[in-house]
Amino acid sequence: MSNISKEFGIDDALKQLDIQKENKGTSVGENFFASGEIIESYSPVDGALIGKVQATTKEDYEKVAETAHKSFKEWRTWPAPARGEVVRQFNDELRRLKAPLGKLVSYEMGKSYQEGLGEVQEMIDICDFAVGLSRQLHGLTMHSERPGHRMYEQWHPLGVVGIISAFNFPVAVWSWNTALAWVCGDACIWKGSEKTPLTSVACQKIAARVFKENKVPDGISSLITGDYKVGEYMTQDKRVPLISATGSIRMGRIVAQEVAKRLGKSLLELGGNNAIIVTPDADIKNTVIGGVFGAVGTCGQRCTSTRRIIIHDSIYDKVKNAIVDAYKQIKIGNPLDENNHVGPLIDKDAVKNYLHALEEVKKEGGTILVEGGVLEGEGYESGCYVKPAIAEAENHFDIVQHETFAPVLYIMKYSGEVDNAIELQNGVVQGLSSAIMTNNLREAEKFLSVEGSDCGIANVNIGTSGAEIGGAFGGEKDTGGGRESGSDAWKVYMRRQTNTINYTKDLPLAQGIKFDL
View (spheres, rainbow, N blue to C red):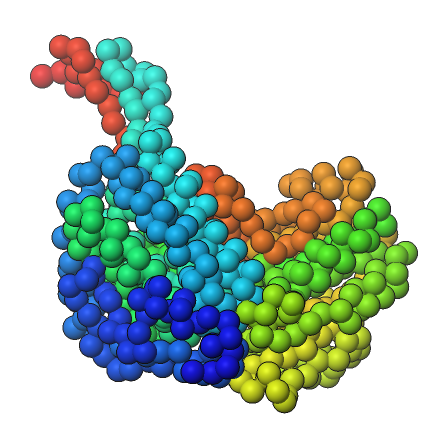
């Protein structure tokens, strides 16, 4: 065991979560295990091997899918509040295990321990939301044009929901989907990221224990593990009517095409290229805090990370200098040490992408304001620690138009009215998160209007990063158009049915059509 693992109690956390060095990869309840090749999970924090998981084979998947499909038929008959009670108990376990699960998230993914705890808190919050939702799941009633008729609509469980999640939020995004899908009456098959397999196993084990105690049929919560080929088992499976996929735009296009071929449904939450507009009326202190956290939090590996800051030319130098100065205070290192702000990137491929972005922005004519680079020496042995960098750039640069999952921030200026800044902000293919810093009511309202931000999330006087579960989460354009978490996002996990009841002795037809026999 590494020194970091010993010093920060990783072994105790793994023990509490029932994670072994050799994990079979629980797939269906406690009765079936994956049998494929070994996947090794190395921590980007110190490069140490945390544990091993077996991948899911095609034969394994067939059993998982068939079990989930059969168990759904029973689960859908449970009253929704009874399903909510199971989720409540699952939530109790999350509260009890918040610290060790947050620690595992931090150690396996590389985000700060505080962010790891925050991610588990998101799981807790969405479960609270889902429990309340289990006593709502409401439809509508409407007046019929025919006398003696009543019309209403109701929502029924959809079936088996396939969930594909990414490494950067290895547990929260799964819970956004599964907590809602469970109370809606669906079974869930989860493909977690092969880069963070142990967090997936930990969550599955927690769910399996709770489900067993409540005699929930095996297969309502299932886990499959492996690379994109394992994901293809689900995207091509007609027994899985909905695929919820979080990841890159490239991945989302593939998923959408495969699911569309069989006329299934997709919920896509893909890449972001998020900007903060800073107007002359902005609070500079809050701008710096929001901008810097958005750019360097999770080492720039959030889909809502701040990639661009668009500053009015009248305050450009003032804001630019304040952000550059703030970067001098950033502490980079072991994310389990709460004195540090920034941990490592997920792996060395991510480091290569980071270095490529810095080279490309210079080639296109950008100016590096805060030098990047890979950190070496004691504490950085994993080779995944990099310096958050800032570059002056133009919005039309090719590298600026693309999302780089790393702490590279592009700063640019605008002139004139806020409309010009909004045009720059909207001038990318992604449409996830956006923000404006201003104390000018007209600018704020313009930003939120139909002529303003074209993103799924638009904030005023807070940054682009971070979202509460009460609102629907997702974005437009190449971000995929999906919505997860709060508001009425639950409806995607259900099928709508319109009902008409005739309580008379006659049979009048709609639209006044006559058909007498």
